Image (cartoon, rainbow, N blue to C red; front, side, top):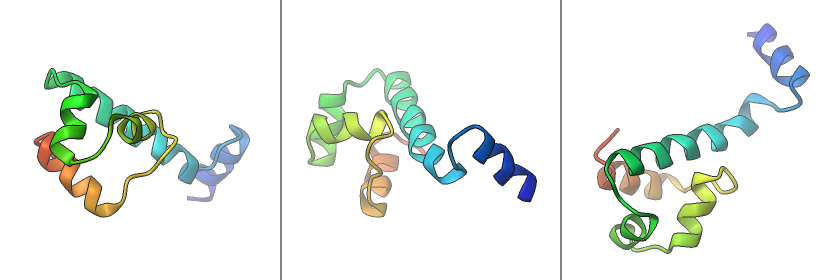
Length: 77
């Protein structure tokens, strides 16, 4: 475990700071697999495309409620 933290520190980013980026990439990939636009997903969530874009780029972390809704909209867990 300490080895992973050391590698994360050496790379300049902690494991925690990589999570939003990984999550965003996964969200975008799943949305594209389903051939949905950001506008379509945002509409189904009752949100806006700007917020979804920020999440997909790893600049914003959605709330747990929003993650649950995203999982439903994107048919994933």
